[in-house]
Length: 143
Image (cartoon, rainbow, N blue to C red; front, side, top):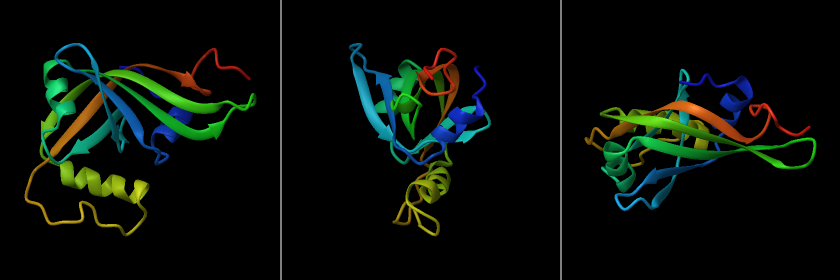
């Protein structure tokens, strides 16, 4: 597992929607927008139902995500973090994680999911194997 440098951690927790890529059964990419956060050096996201991305990750746990940092480098390029990793799924805790992430993505005091749910949901944890993109977390970053 790759340790995440502080600038990458800030980008990942900045409240910008992550573009998540998993692998469909036929080898094609499946792309989803997800809210992400951190638990230690793992990236986490939640789902309240068994969606295609979860079915893909059970079959093939490889995952990629691109997350805008909301910043620009000295050359004027928009910075973004790209991570490659391996996911593991646990049942339960989905609603609690979504509630925590809602404070970042929607604002303090927001209740999410907005409807009562007894469903356990799912939490996905991504162990990061590699990091790239444009920003200070890349060793050969311009500027």
